[in-house]
Length: 130
Image (cartoon, rainbow, N blue to C red):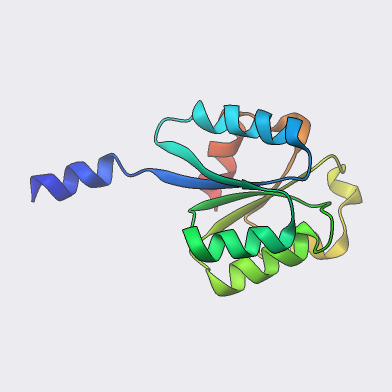
């Protein structure tokens, strides 16, 4: 019994980063590594790849850019949260909250965070709410 309690304390949260810009993926990866018990399991550049990677890896968290080539981050979020409801998606963008596309708030994401506001502390805050 003590072993399973210890395992629960040391559970690792797998994170998928989805952004078509390599510099932002680098920043997001660095932020995730600053969170104890979190690890990046993959980085992809499109909504289609995000859906496929989530199906393969079943991450606990997806950091999803809204503006992606091909399928948008909003549509990818909708597909991910429908197929794998245990996966929590945080939408990221440079949009002001008032300028978000209308369907951003109804696609199943647990939160929206402006890219400039993305910090380890903010990430923990939004995921602890969701």
